[in-house]
Length: 106
Image (cartoon, rainbow, N blue to C red; front, side, top):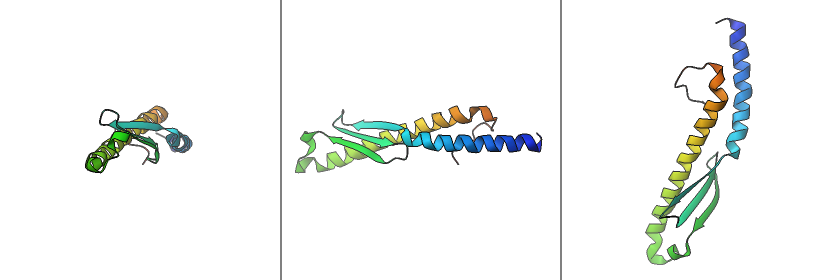
């Protein structure tokens, strides 16, 4: 591989990384737990965008259950965000000829 070709690929990769970062912010994913009693929505930066709690869980004796459901819903939403980011990264970077298994963004 010649130097000019490598430089061209590096520039192309830099442009695509900028585009990827913009698209990641727009990604949203929802996670739920307890059969939908708790629902969490995160963006691509894992910022909490919304939270929904069924009123039946708003009792003193349901506190621990609610806490567990919030954690489970957040974990599910975060996994979905990470999967969406990985798919978007592969889609944008697929044509660059990068080594298999290379994870982006770095």
